[in-house]
Image (cartoon, rainbow, N blue to C red; front, side, top):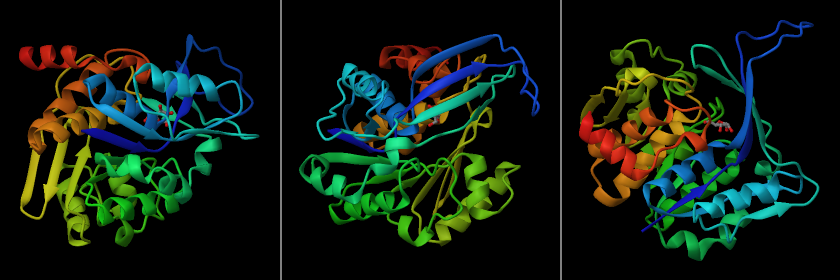
Length: 305
Ligand code: RIB
């Protein structure tokens, strides 16, 4: 069973900072690290590290990052046969700032990610039709995302949409055919304009989306845990307690772990638990993809926790 990821890749330029400089101010930061990221690529790598077969559809630029990004995906045995380099475009890059409380602020410059089009989905039809799940995020054009959802619906392939980064223009009518809708609390707030301060608030905001026709909403809430809401009710899972060093890419880690487990088990709660463990381990190390654990490490962690 192959999992498809139709989405973004970025090169993460991570500065570890004491505080953000004010306009006109120069400040020294203690550390810097460069690594492969992008929500789509992170989710693809997380699935692959769990042992899933992964097919990725993404576009890179013709700069120094493009080929390295494709080589990185290949190093995890991810099928990149339908990926391409866009001549004259820059690759996606993400300057990231991680503060001393391990919280991150991210800027994204989409570059070639913006060129992933409906035609690319059409060209990959045969590969995509053989997949058991399609994962999407919002770092590519919305039209391409909507087309991929229609594709999944037409071919009876479940679709998981991670609405990140938040886009207030997301059309609820066009995303209602997703099997899973997976925002974090701030994305849920931005879409529904409803409070997400308490668990009760989160459930109410999700119920608004259920009433709009979305089947399963799973909200990732960091150290607050995760919440699954559908028409039958809700279920909250606590987060594992770990010492967080760098939370960048933790949501992507959850989605990768969830998708791998769900594709095999079809058990939503157990898949959330696996995703939560995968994410918990990822925040104990610096970086995005390079902080992701192996499947064996996750299984060991679950045994001990
Ligand atoms: O979700 C984390 C990711 O967001 C980073 O890897 C960065 O590239 C941005 O896409």
